[in-house]
Length: 132
Image 1 (cartoon, helix red, strand yellow):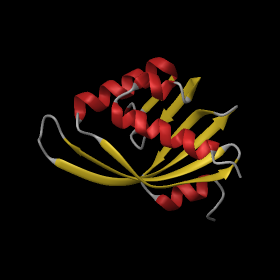
Image 2: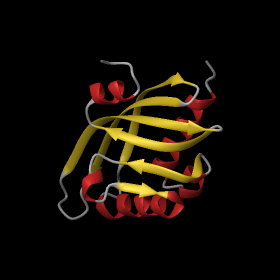
Image 3: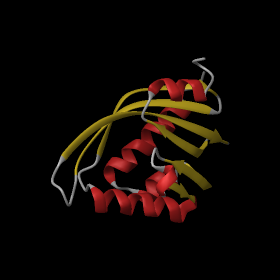
């Protein structure tokens, strides 16, 4: 399998850490959709305006938010899994937070079209048909 999709996801994550919205959007389709674990309470970001809101939300909630990749694997030519750790300090609370997630990236024509963030690795693997 090609490593182009893996590198695409790595560039997108680097853009988040750099707060480079243009760099992130360059990795995505125009109608990209980002679903966070908080989707039920406004955690879905759609299109370029939605991604702009995502970057604003990160900055407002935790300006030092960072993602460290533990691994990126291509499932097939249209899907990539990213295993990551996050760290941040709440702007209002000052509380330091750390966590992990597994993200599923769906691709169309070499661009990210849909990102699903899972806090449970098994759920992410099941979403791409790797766990039953």
